Length: 43
Image 1: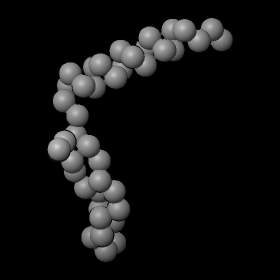
Image 2: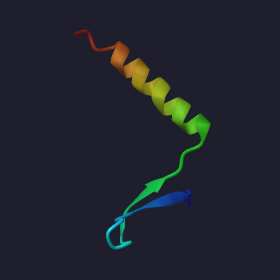
Image 3: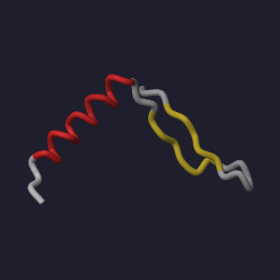
């Protein structure tokens, strides 16, 4: 299972969200795919 971190409501300490922690390689791959996709859009 991937590592995650929690986001807390500062007023009451309740967990309001849980988010994955990505490695640098994972982020770079997603950004590269996004750039490739955007290069296909001709505006």
